[in-house]
Length: 212
Ligand SMILES: [Zn+2]
Image (cartoon, rainbow, N blue to C red):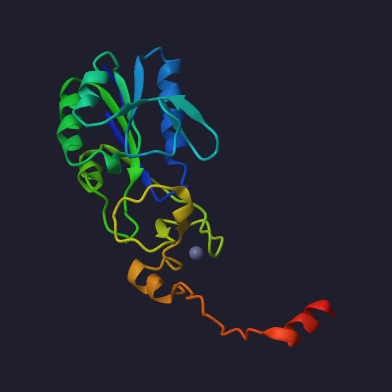
């Protein structure tokens, strides 16, 4: 049915343009009159309900799925399927994509390849191995301004692998990336409010001072 790639992966760090590239490719399939659908996991709370949004303002309708087996249910009428934020779908997504490929569908998937520690993220490494086209996008490093950011730097204390929210992260190049252990050691500890002893003035002196 299709010529060309059947399973495409778009990966990279945050702010690399993964979602906008996914939307762009799905729009092209729509121009070719192919039935399409975009699905994203419920874990991603950045976009408004039933949409996928890129940071540069591109938006497209999307179905939010709670479990990755629901992907099969929602995509039965589509022939080109976009999957955003694949790292949050869980390991079950590998089997789901294999099933879709057996059904002769085309899959375009995007997601973070590495987590905040710089370690491979969830099912993404396996998906990368299965894909027949892989594009690794780079962002602008928020520390040095270079064009080669490939890591997602977490800016707050937390050892949870999944901590959703753009404010807690920034894109960094490999030279500026600080793995959590090293970074967190240098974070300022919360300042303890010191009680400064106050001299309580009593009697006539205090009254005089107040009046003056
Ligand atoms: Zn840098």
